Length: 327
Image (cartoon, rainbow, N blue to C red):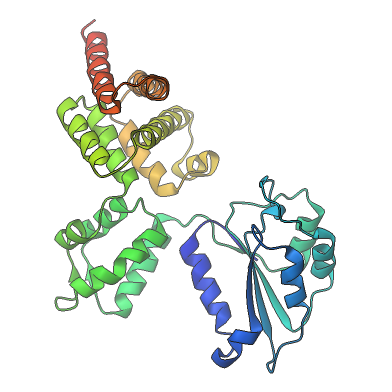
């Protein structure tokens, strides 16, 4: 089983497993089934079949949500008793791979207990910043390309430190650096678009530094680029919620690693949040969060222009905070 939410690593493992089946045999001896649309019995029929003119059969079972505590609204009827029996007595010539893009399974389920007892589980959940850097450096080294420290940092910033997003950006950066064999900051700034989350992170900075003009301009830019105001506001709320949680828990003695684990947030996001909360007090974070919460309510219950509502939030937040400071 491949368990975890880092798609890049899961895809790498999937490609490695495919190499076990000769190219000319894959049409007949490789199967892939999505449990959100296909009954597990179909995948089991394939898994229990003998290889066709080959030594092995490879069967991927994708999105086995029934191994988690997740409730899915689906009309697919799964024969889990047959799956239980297969886990207990698997077909020797078949490699059955469950691709589970989840943080964890429901350990209380008999099916999961049997799976853990009889299967090899490869965890591809969170990847640390250091591990992500190693993947990047190894990929570049293979092409004899280097990357400047500030360029690597900006690449992390623009992709939220997500391994899959970073590796997806490397090919065009390597093409750009084909002659110089070096990736500079200017290349990252020119070729890698900031994610919505990173733009919102910049927006959070503008809000907390009372930069009304900069905040409003960036908000307008995001809306002009077809980002929904409610979505922007939701991400803003999530960011301020994270900052509050980090501020409170860090004061209680939580380390960066324990914060990421407790809050179930990517370690790189926690790192950025810890850097930011050092410069702002808890009342300011709380005031911004509550102000944005009220803005969301108004967006959902009134016909007022969302961009105007954000401008009003900024004016009120800045005025209220300045009044507190001058008391």
